[in-house]
Image (spheres, rainbow, N blue to C red):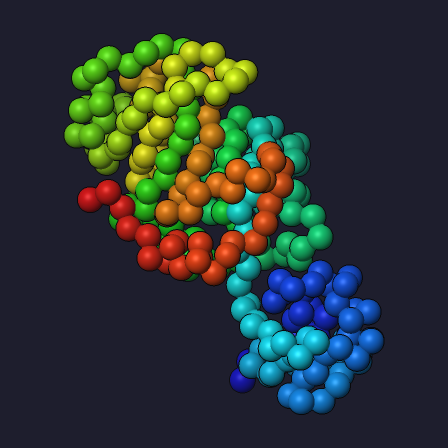
Length: 245
Ligand code: URA
């Protein structure tokens, strides 16, 4: 039998209203459960009960999926004694049980997925699944022509095994940064991998931003520190994502 859940929480987890907005909506008689008005926010229902808000059927999922445009200066963790965590940016949502999908360095910006779906997280970060992650990097030195082929073949970065094939492309340098711009697509998540791949050619990364993961692009409408729920389409892309090989 499915778990019992408060009606106001159920509605907020459907993503249509925040919990704070759900309470007056329930009290105003806008919510029906299995065909009857329920005006008690704490009323307990089952996940498979039929709930309508203003006549529209709600779709409940026990999992939540967000994209955060991670700003620099916060850590990709649930808790940290010293620094802000990425979870602290999810204002107004129920954050217990949520965690970041993998890690971005403290000084890296960009797309970070946050969920409470452990299975999807595992699939996205497993090196066996080869999920593509694309980064925009500004570096202080131009890479030689041979680097493109070396990245594609599998670059050694001081570990026993070479990196999996990675695609390097030149990119424009965005203001206010100076140097040489690149886009790099990798399918693993080794420690400081992007910085170490550039450093194999003595190029230091001065700015790093993840711009896509598993076919989902960072929403450029999100300023650093802003987040939103993933759309159904984005979630389907993630679930179907495959790598370069
Ligand atoms: N590679 C890095 O070096 N840093 C990141 O944050 C992500 C990938």
